[in-house]
Image (cartoon, rainbow, N blue to C red; front, side, top):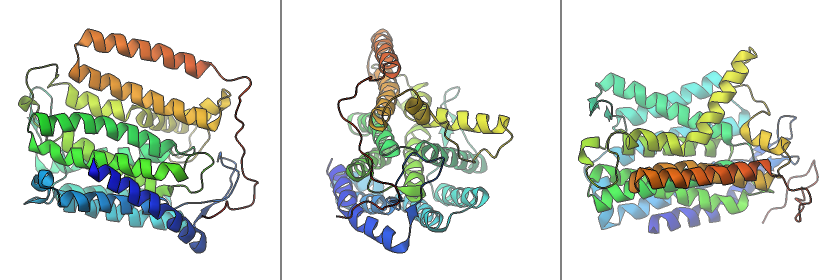
Length: 372
């Protein structure tokens, strides 16, 4: 938990100076027809998150319980190398804008460098344990990382949405990987535990400045970094922990390593899939932006920005919680709890406030919000 607080604190305190830097460098998101915000807003918040990541990992390196992660392993170096490439790519994109092929090439480079250094899918829990050959391992890892990066990038459309969803998803990963590493003594799950808890801290530290009305956006620097780290947690948890090592209790050793990553990433993945299908059918570039994402549809139903964001948080928590319930409780109880949760969520989504008590006051267009 110390790593969580360190990542959150450093991210929080770095965000205002990074905001000022973004304004001085002219890294400001303009108001466009496809955007929800109506005020030019500084972006580059991912740079503050990168500081939180470094702080969390630095503190972890001093903790005896994390020695297995840092001693005799290239995993942390691989993670930092991939993160560095993504942060540089994101800064360039936030400042000048990159076309989709260039961004994709940079994402593949970051994923490939990370995979070649050891953060890669080693086996799949299919038919027991299916071991991958080195080339397939790298290719499969690159696909997972690139999909995760773009899923988080696509869902980053409302103030506080991406940071909160990733914090919730990473929290679910943390709970499961903590049980594996601490309770069951599986050292391969320790890196997933560390990455997950640092991700939670980064998200929570950034949210105070990113919730509606946002004073700063994370930009592609932040969304791509979060996507890469979430993929790294998935890979180190699901693709390196041998399912045969899990036994007894309420665990589902064969299915859960497949269920959990899909569950915590369900909303971003569904949004990404729908966007690709929608744009392809319209004969448009799959990466061409539009205003038909899930969060846009919640706004069209009459939900405010804040309510839409928290509904997306709740859906993420429900799906991830269902996967964890399957892991720790009898299936019948997990099913009943999930069914009740789905009914409640459907009611909340369909019920829009007719007379909201709190009006969301937006800054006037054409001005960059206050600093400090």
